[in-house]
Image (cartoon, rainbow, N blue to C red):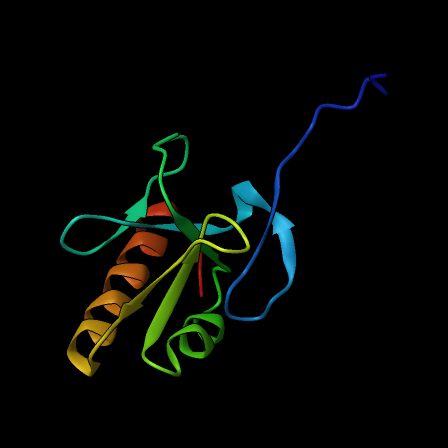
Length: 104
């Protein structure tokens, strides 16, 4: 039974744990050699996690030096990041937001 309202996916930011429409969040996908920031409109499949466009959320998500990608309750992959990798990811997130015209 359809209500006539288009479906809009909602995802949870791993930093603040708040739910937002998927299109408002930054999507990170686990690549073969590093984390990739998925561009809006790219429907690449694979394990992903989502972050708000706020730098504070990024800091909270990286606080323990690891990011967990879940595809189900029982299937998890943990990516450990050293300090240099964390700083590189933060720099890439900032560049991504500048390219989108969004402020952190």
